[in-house]
Length: 103
Image (cartoon, rainbow, N blue to C red; front, top):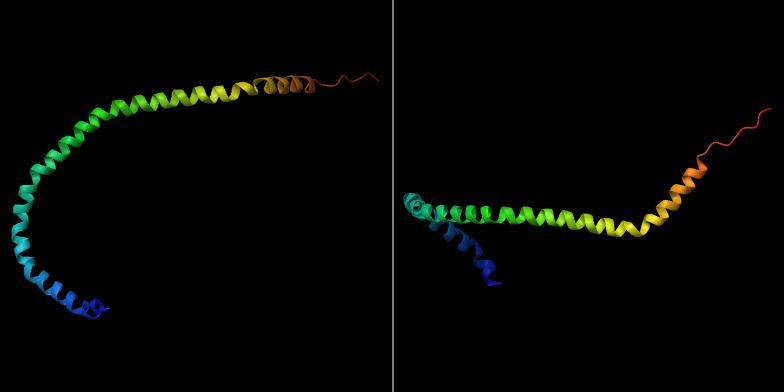
């Protein structure tokens, strides 16, 4: 629990030393960014190359998934064809109009 008592002093020292270091950070920031640019370009190059290599693989995988889903859907619906045929026959029989006898 001592850290709770000392917390205001830690925050005060952090703010004071942060404000003292701020001018040095502002002066050194352009140098740090200048040294960091080659690494950013390298990261961009790797991501671009990997993306260009993986896009065709993802397209082929997506098309293969669509085809397999279609085959699985047809295979799942084939056992229902006899029931659909009986329902179609019943619909054809029931939709015929009743003959009306002349009076």
